[in-house]
Image 1 (cartoon, rainbow, N blue to C red):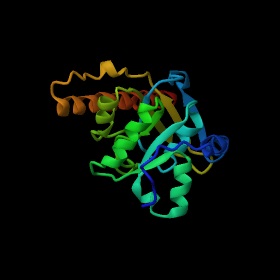
Image 2: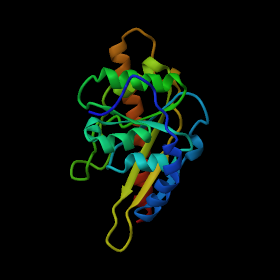
Image 3: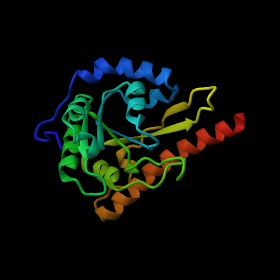
Length: 220
């Protein structure tokens, strides 16, 4: 795997490519952003989002006013060219279904700088054949929130498939910030508090998806 965890990186490539990503999100998809004003202009922040497809980070990059450092699956860092590109887009690898200490330490360094960390708590893409709505999250997002003291911004990606005549629609929905003090961290039972915090975060993401789905149902 090609990635150096030893120093924190922040490339200008992200800013250069962001306008291209934004244009492509409107050409390939009919993209819409709701709640951009909910993104805090400063301070350490975790953006926690459901995961519906490969382009998901691109939709967040295109619509989030702040630069985001993403936790990405380690498999895309196995080829040097791709590893270099994603690293320059401020992504870093995490080995899924494991307590990847290197990735967690790197994520905490990002947050210590008062930067923005992007994470998909489900740990995998939830395909239409399984379920369209978000599923339960892994405890990593709760751990990072508890350890860093960062606030969490729930984000929902809601997709309406195209029918051959119209492009697929993807709505990027930023919810209201969950303050760290509202996640129930008291230091009494860290394992239980981490699990409960993850559940609070995922419930907010699910609520965003449900509202988007209800709105779509009312329009049909």
